[in-house]
Image (cartoon, rainbow, N blue to C red):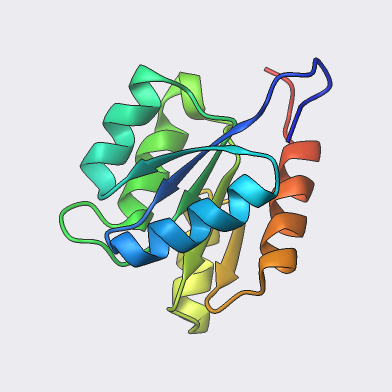
Length: 132
């Protein structure tokens, strides 16, 4: 998807499951986005530092740094303090959802999520992001 300047927007997909990353990459590519992938929280932080994406799609349950820790780390850095972060997780309990929002997720989405709803949530997050 292109932003207002005509540049294709980039989404970093962070998930420790290769199949989940592949499915998300296909949905996002069909939606017109460039997709980068990270297989764990440490990889995500390295990739965000190397090339700032327009949005991060972040799984919660990962080895090492989980999604909550990654989100908190991104919110704690000036460069990524307002970066849209959508958590996408199979954890549907209210405590997990609340924790995701408390650590700074723009939105907390639960799996499984139909592709159209995912793309709608991404478009909304990108449209509502604060100016830097």
